[in-house]
Each structure stands twice: as C-alpha cells, then as structure tokens.
View 1: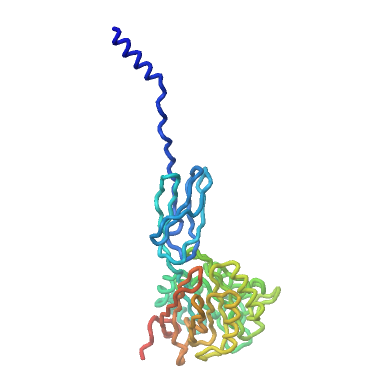
View 2: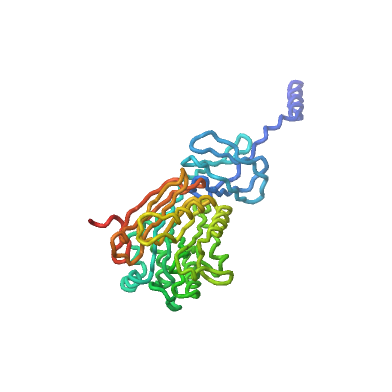
Length: 396
C-alpha cells in the first residue's frame, strides 16, 4: 500500500506542475490574387489581398531573381487592393505574401509590350460608303479587321463626318458616313481611338461634327482632335490597357481654317505651336505614353516637309513618344528618334476610294509600348481595292 500511495502522490505532484506552453503558430498569410494576367513593361499591376493581421509583407521576384520585399501591409479586416509597377526588363514577375517564416501562394504576371496598331485615312462615305451600302457595314474590315482586333489598341484617322443631318460645306470634296458604319468600325474593325483633327470632320457642319463625337462615344471609340469647344478639342484622351495609361492628342493644319474650334464653337484642334505644346504637356502629366497625331503635309508627297519636321520636334520636345501623321494620301517615312521614340509622317489611305499609283499602297503600323516609350516597330503591308484595305502587297 505504501508503494501505491507513493506512486499516486508522485502522479498528483506531476499533474500539479504546469507544462511548458507550445510555441505560437504564425498565422497563415492572407490570400493574394493578381487582377491582371498580363501587363506592359513598367505598367501597373493590380493585386487584391485578403484580410490579414499586422506583419504581412508583399514580396516580388522578377525574371527568376531573388525575392525582395516591396512593402509592409497594415492589418485589414477586409480585402484590399494594391497597385505596384511591373519591372521594365523582365518577361514575368511573381508576387507572394509572407508573415514570419510562412509564405503564401505565388502569383505570376506576364510582361509584354502593349501593341498599338495604327492605320491611315478612314472614309466611311464616298467609294467605301457605296460599297458598304451594297455589302454591309462590316465589309471594309473583312481582311484587316482580325489584325486590328488582335492589337491591344487600334487607332486611325477618321476622314469624314458621321451623321444623318447637315449640308455639304462649300468645298470641293465632302465626305459623310452613316452611324452604323462607325459602329462596325469598332466591332468589325477593332478601332479604339480615332483622330478628328482633319479637313473633313466638319464637312457637313458643326452639328454633324457633334453627331460624330456622340456616335463614336456610343460605339466605344475615343475621339481626339475635335470637340464642342476649343478646350475639348485640345483635351487629351487617356486610354488604359495592360497597366499603362496611353494619351492621344490630335491636331490639324490643313484648310479650311474655319473648321477650327473656338471658345464656344464646335470644331477641330488647329496646330498652333503654343496649343500643340500645352496639349502634349498636359497629356504627358496624365499618362505613361503619349501619342500625338497630326493632319499635315502635302498631298502625294512621298517625304515629309520642313513644317512636318518642325511640328514633330515640338511634339517630341513637349513629351510625345510617338507622332503619327495623315493627309498626304501616300506613305511617308517611319523614323526612329533615339531609342524609345518614333515618327510616322504619313500612313496614307486605308478605308478610302484610292485609285492612282501610290495612293492604294498602305500599311498597319504596330508599335510595342512600355512605360519607357516605343520598344518595337512593325509594319504590315496592305493595298486598297475598291475602297477596302487588303492585307499583303498588290500583285505587280
């Protein structure tokens, strides 16, 4: 009995002795989701972080390099959104959350240049308008549409009014298309942005110009270079794609001078040097990449003139990354300016009633963009038959 009593007493003594507390378990890292699967170099990456405690850090690894801390997060009772910049010189970037020694799920985001496809003059009246009436509004885009839609952004010079009202102004050529044709330019042609700073946007009067702006907006197309007044005409349009803000501004210096916008008058943005400078600078403050488009030059001249070169220098000095021109109705040179800027003096005709030598040769110019400017330049040749651009070179 003594032995049993002793054993019991020992057991009671052991149970009364407090045991060492287990080490604290670090909480799991919050959930992490990348809102964008692909961004451009230097573009903004949007991340969604779940609720979590203090002490959580966001880590980043670019192109297989070492993990590095990007920032520390505050405690959150609900999901929160973060925005960070993608690196300029990697093909992918990975993110994860960490708390203590615990690591969360890795999320990968691919990095590639934003593809901006640009084309020349688009006239939805005249010869193309007659063909559209016969074959349907999508007809002009049957060959080039897939290429334009495959780009991240597509731009062209809209060389006509789009309205069912108005009367022709007193000039030799006046062009007008139907609203359904502009809607098809968005859906079948893939156009995202058009320039209206040209010598045909007001061909059917200022109310027809306002109709053009409304129809473009309703079709999901951003229009630059024209507006209900001068302030709107010169205002940059900023489009967001692949984490980049791309600003467009448009200017014309082709008569009629009367088409220009006034303080309270609808019209186009005239290429006054001071206005070009202030508009491009405004775009630079709002965007990562700036595209300035001009209606300029001499018809059928295959090279630029001194005025085009002067306006290019002004636009680039004011902050433009790319300068894209129209009006000559033929192709003019595409030139690199330094490592990350480019000028295309004229992209010629595109959807247009072209018949003479040189005016039927066209192209789609595709620029690869990053936050540091123009990274790649690619030209896709095309030719015009019956007002419709067809991919490839014309048979000799």
